[in-house]
Image (cartoon, rainbow, N blue to C red; front, side):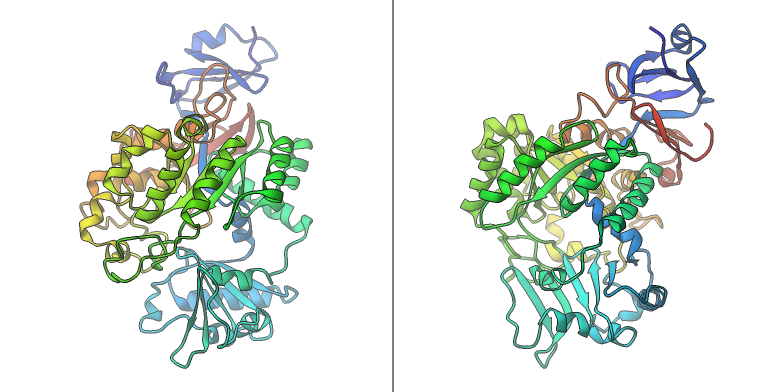
Length: 543
């Protein structure tokens, strides 16, 4: 056997327990055929072999983002992105600049605004803030963390939202003291606006996707497991795949909304699975939402919130209908992912999975987010075969969202803190764990999330002792959750997630060894090269 590509002189961290470290890797036909010493690989070279000298650099499997919304992330790159804005003045300046630069756009859409801008103190978000800048076109911004939106008067008018509009089921139209809509919309109330936003054309979507794929490859991501709201990108990705232009692997899903799961939706999902079922495009997921988020008191907390005991949050599905829907999805061979943040939602997801336990043990249903499970539910994950899917950049997200320190604890109470984002507890209980970002909600860089899971501390070292430090994990565990753990969570572990003979040659070269650098500097490591199926799809410099 002669290798087509050989990577020599590296520090190869394989994430394979049977052979954790190596010096060199050989590739044929996009798959790993040899992992060993430099001498082992040199014996497999001939004049046609492509040899890459790693010069001692760190080579590992590519990152797999186990939870994001890829088309939303692509749109974030093209809309008014304000996640990193540090003031309301900056948000409004970006709106003004975007409106002036894009006079032809019929709508202006922004992404990821926060709650805690210092120059907003004492005021609420209001439509007039946008009206003062853009009044002739509808403006709508999506919140970064609270399943909410913010609209100007033009957008409210186009959506027919007035003082007489009742709150929709599972949604809230926030009103001022006179009963007038403020422009602030929560949960399903946002749909009244969303349905009026023009859909971009195929060419526009493709350009956005190409930019987002480059972004992902630049962070060393070789597969994304997209958690819904992006069915319209499926056929475009297939075109890119067929033209050999696709440099990122996709796990695809469809959102399953209440009140039931049957009929046309199930039929379409079966068709999509038949159409997208290969190494690059893998449709297999039925995605459910059970609740909202804690920040807006819409996460399902049956025992009430610490700061509002009368509030229970929102349960988006009837219990019996949800359990039946999970069973139907699994009967048809789909993997189920359930958005469940509050204690009650997590318990219900696990109840549904346990009710269909034999299929669950095979299909690996997932609970997404897991911010505050009951202590008794943590052990249930491994018993049922459920995956605990976390987005660790959200742990004490001071660096991602302004004004959030202390809000989580205020919502659930200090007595519940030991179970906050309980990654350590899940691992100790034997739960299979995967990491992702929920991009564009937070930064796409996996190393930011790993740093946060390891230190549970912001970049400016707040809190000094870490936020719930008992739930810290090791760097090794973080790397595993972003590689082999994520591959297992997406049924791709036989082909991806480790540098193992027979698996796809999806690998990355890093500028430093994350196992040796100070954990506080993990986010400073950059990706030197990204390799997908033996093909270099990103190169910062020659390694």
